[in-house]
Each structure stands twice: as C-alpha cells, then as structure tokens.
Length: 613
Ligand code: G6P
Image 1 (cartoon, rainbow, N blue to C red):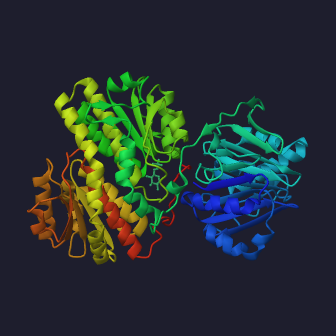
Image 2 (cartoon, protein in one colour):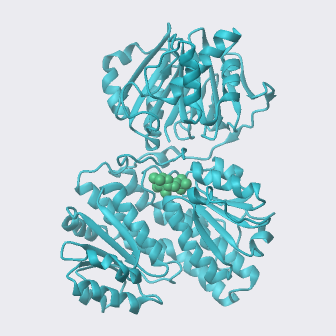
Image 3 (cartoon, rainbow, N blue to C red):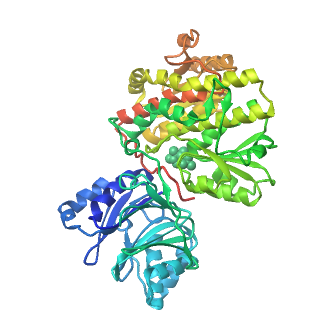
C-alpha cells in the first residue's frame, strides 16, 4: 500500500508527480505529499486525497519549478492519517527528504537509539525514523546519500520501496526496494520512478523493475544499480506493453463500472492465443518446464487473499472435478503462520491481481523454501509474485484500478479453468469429447457476460430499493458458494453495508435466525446440480418473510414465482457459471454504493495493493 512517485530530469517535476500520484491513488488515499528540489527542498503535504493536496498548495504550485522531486499517497500503517504523518518526511536537520512504501519493523529500537543520541521526531511514522537513521549514518560517515542509504538498509528489518533526496547533493536521486515494488522508467535524460508502471507509460515504455535489496542512483551523468554490498549490477531494461487508455476512465463514471463492463473483453484477452476450441488446443506458454509436476501433483495448494482467495475456492471445485487432484485453498496470511505441511514437489498456485500482496508473497517464499513448485496466476506483468514464481500464467486483464476487484476475478477464473482443463486432458480425467465441449463453452463466456451486462438498468432499479438496507445475506451452493462470498465482499467493501456470504445449506445452522422482512437475501440460484436444494432454501427464507433477490438461469419459471426479484443470466456449465453469475452481484454492489453516495473507486480504509502484512 502507499503509492510512491519520483521524477528526475529537466522538466518541472511537480505536475508529473501529481499526475502520477493520481494514477496510484488506488494504493492508498489517507494523505498525500510532494517534495521538490529547488534552492533547498520544498515540502507540501496534506491529509486526504491528492486533490486535497493540490487545493492546499494552490497558487504556490506556480513557484514549484524544480526538476527533481518525490511524491507519496498514503495508506496509514504507523500513525493515524494526518498532515504530520503524511510523506515526504524530512531528516531532523531538514536536509534529507524521503518517501516510503512498506513497514520498517525494527523502527521502535532504531527510534530509541536515535532518541538517546538526541534526535527528536515530529511524526509517529517509521519512515521519519528511517530518514533520521540515514541522516545519522551520513553525519558519521561523511559520505554520499547512496552510501548512507545502503548502510541503513543493511540494518533495517521490514519492507520498503523508498526514494531519497538531499539538499547537499541536489542533482541526485537515490531509490531502493525490498518487498515493496518499484519501477524505474527510462526516458531521454529523465527518469520516472513509481510503485507500478501506470504513472510512467505516458512518458516511456522502457522500464527497469528494481529487485529486492537493490539501490538505484540517478544523477545527470549516470544511472546505476547497486546491491547492498555496493557492487554494481547491470540494469535489465524491459518494454512495458500498456496503453494509456487502459488506465483512464474512458467515459465511465468510475473505474469499477468501466472494469465491470470490460469483462467480455478482458476474459477474451485472457484466452487469446491460448484457447483454440475448433482445434481442441490449449496453449499455456508460461507453464512448460514444470508442467509435469502440475499434471502429476498429488495435491494442489492454492493461496491468495480477498477476491483472489474466492477465485481459489472456485478453482478448488474445478480442479477436483476435472482433474481429480485434491486441493486445499488457504488464506495466504494463515498459511504462512501455521507451519503448514509442504512436501518437496508439492504444487502451489498463488493467485494475485496485483502480484504484490505481502501475505501471498510471504506464503510463496515459505512454500518455496520447503521445496514446492510455485505457479503464479497474476495480472500485473513484472510484479513481485510473477517474478518469484517458478512458472505461471498472466491474466492479461489489463490494469485494474477500482479498489474492488471485478475483472481480475473473472480473468482469474478463466485462466484457472484453462489450466485445469489442460491438466485434465493430460491426465485423462475427462474424455476428449468433454474436453472439447468445455473449450467451446469457455469460449462462449464473453458473450454470455455481455448479455448479463444488458440487465444493468434493471439491476440499478433493484439497487435503488435496497440502498438503505442495513444487512444483506448472500447464499449459494456448489460453484455458486464462492460467488456468494464474493458478492457479499463487494457490497461491504464499497457500500459499507454489512453483508455475509454463506453456503445456502448452512443457513439453517445459524444465519436463518437473522431472517425477517428487513433482511434482503441474494440467492445465486442458477440451474445446476444443487438447483432443487437451493429452491428449498429459498422457500425457507420466504417462509420467514425474508426478501429474496435471485440470480437465475434464463427461462427459469419456478424461482420467479417465489422470489421478490429475479435477475436472469445465460445458461452455461456449472463450473463456468461463477464467471457469469458474479456479474450481476458486481453491478448490484456498484449501484447501491453509488446511490448511497459512497466513493466507489476509493472506499474508506481500503487499498488495492496490500504490501504490508
Ligand atoms: C486487497 C484488495 C482486494 C484484493 C486483495 C488481494 O484487499 O482490496 O480487492 O482481492 O487485496 O489482492 P491481490 O492483488 O493479491 O489479488
């Protein structure tokens, strides 16, 4: 969490940094700040969003002409959101300035040590401790900032992506990373640093992804990358393939709505060049060397967080049904701390939109250490999880900017389904006829999602009736159970209405006590192997005067007689139904949140990329 941006070059840095911060606001928006190098370092910072910072700076922006600068948009960890805790932070002599994404875990002991030396602190942040520590090293070593940063980082425990400037070395920018992402865009005599490539691509498509424990030093004469032992490394320059329009709203009111409507395209993009239904071919270029381990795996462990974990739950059903391989789905945060049993050669699928989620990364490291083979199912190209996995498959869903994940979920299901089908085909656990049938069915999903999107007006009308509800229950069975969880998560994330997802059959073991005429219950009740059971569950809710909104298969005549509201979706094989049935739930939560006046793209307290534990 937290987004960092820096610029080094010959144009005024301020407008470039502010624009970049707006692109990274999905990473946190509790406060924002900039520091510009010009006759000393000028710092402006403010609690709130980047727009609040701009308002706060006002006319003073005209005098910000410096051509080197750093900026930060914060998701608070140490210290509440406030002007003082906002980044950039200065060293106590005011000469150094830093932006930081991550957590310095041993900041308490460092602070104690520095306090005993007479340093004082203005904020409650770990970052101010880090810059003061760097200042202290500088005063003792009489060296350059990069040297002080390097020494400091060998003593720091935790995660960081940082950029540092000094008034004593005004034409220099030093950056480093461990655990938190940092990308450096290479222009002509100018450099753009950011937490991801989105603030960079309008200036250059040549980038260097900094690796852990690497330090970048930028001056007018050189661009160096060194390790923590001060040895020079060769930067590996890559070309990012991202269009500017993919990170803009393109006429939609919110990124979330745009991303919901992009799904027919993003699902197609995930299958492009991979799925050839006519020929019966599935090509997954990223899974080659370790393909046999996957096919012959005795069990598969899936790790992820949030929506990605929900995609994992669907994948569990798919892999078990198609491939007959036992699957365990774990919250990455639990997995990493509970001494899991992992054998050499075990297969781990790590699912992540951002590719930067700290818990998922740590779960991967743990599994890797114990000898597991890691397959990353990741959206963000070049991200930490993509790079640390042995092999994997990108989602190719394009940048997802709305904090509530939508198109990444359906893209994850698409990719996971393709992987399962490929494994099943190789293992012979499905017949050739079934395999081909499934390929055709998967290929038809984008059109089916398009048809669901045509119901958006109806869903908006339903949303209006429920926008003031205090609670919601989401119920589904089988493949639609994870969809119930995802629907409930979407609603609570962006509308702040309490919502719970449950397997429909579990309702009678507790949640049924909550049902009265005030309780909207969303059933995902499409025609599948548990349809009849779900119909009984709907009757149980109606018998207790609950209000039922049901997502049903087109042409269903039974449930519309019982439910208060129905939303139809096209029929598909039940294993692929989550790709379709989740879409009305995304729209329902979107419209409810908008009607309640909530900030859909930047819900309170959340951040999209959770790079802290
Ligand atoms: C955060 C986001 C969720 C996301 C989860 C996992 O909580 O708000 O939308 O599902 O992190 O993120 P990942 O990038 O690993 O999929």
